[in-house]
Length: 365
Image (tube, rainbow, N blue to C red):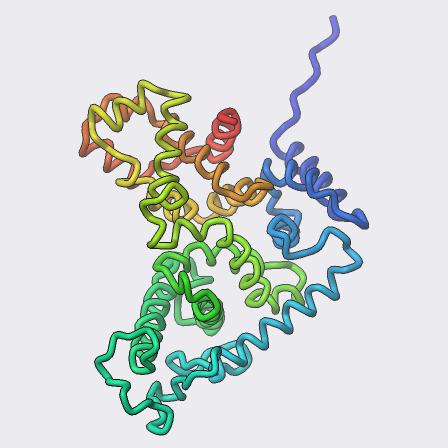
C-alpha cells in the first residue's frame, strides 16, 4: 500500500516562498499583483529583500526595474533639498541644533537660536498674539512641535538598541527619525506632527536601514521619508482632528470595526459593546491609528506589516480585518469577562501566533 505524500515542513515552505519572491523581483517589469499575493503571506526574513518589497508595495519604486536607479537618485536628491530648506543646521544627516528650520513660504523664519530678527517683525505683531499670521505664534508652534517630536523619538521602542541607547548608531537613527518627522510636519501644515507618527515611521526606517545593500541602507532616511508620506496618505483622515467625528475620521473607522465584528460574531459584539459597554474607542483607537505597532513584539509587527502593505487599496481594510480577528481569537475570555477584565485584556493584548491571526483575518474577506 502506497504511503500518503508527506506534508511540506515549515522550513521548506519558507524556502519555497523565498524562491518565489526572488523570482518575482528578478523580472524586468514587476508584476505587482503577484508580488502582493506573495508578500501578503509574509516576506521571509532570510531573503534580504523586505526593503525592496515594501518600496514596491508603497509605490516608491516603479514596476520597471530599469527605472529604479534613476528614480531613487531623483527622490534622494529631492530629500536632500528638503533638508537644506527645513533643516539648515543638519550636517551629514545628523541634526546639530535643537531644530531650526529654513523658510518655506517667504515669511520670516526662526534663525539658529530660535529668535526672530527684529527687522522682520511687523510693528503690529505682538508676542502674545495667537493669530495664524503672527510670526511670534509661528515660532511658538514650531518650538512646541520640535519638543513633541524630540520626546516621542526618544521614547520609540526603548527596548531595542537600534532605536535607543548611547551608541552613535542609535543616536544617528534617532536623528533620522527626527529629521523625517520635522520635514513631514513642515510640508503638511494641515496635519503637522501628531503624537504617535514616530511609531508608524519606525518599522519603515528599521527595515530600510537594515537593507543588506549598504548603498540602500545609507539612504534609508530619504527612502523612509517618501514611503512614510505614501503610507500616511491613506491614513491621514485618522490623524486630522477636524474629521474625528466624520464618517471618514477615526470615529467612522471605529464604527466600521464594530460593524465588521457584528457581521462575523454578533454574540461577541453584543456582549462587548452592549453588555459590558467596552466600546471600540477604548482599545482600538490605538490599534488603528498606530497600525498595531504597540500591540505585538517588533518582529511580529514587521510580519503583520508585510500583509498590511500588500493591500492594493491601502492598509485600512486589512487592518480592520486583523483587529476583528484579534477580538475573535480571545472571544471565550471576552464572553466570560466584565468591563474591567475585558478592557484590561484588550489594552494589553496577549501574545498570539501571528500566522494564525493573519489566517483568521484573511478568512474575514
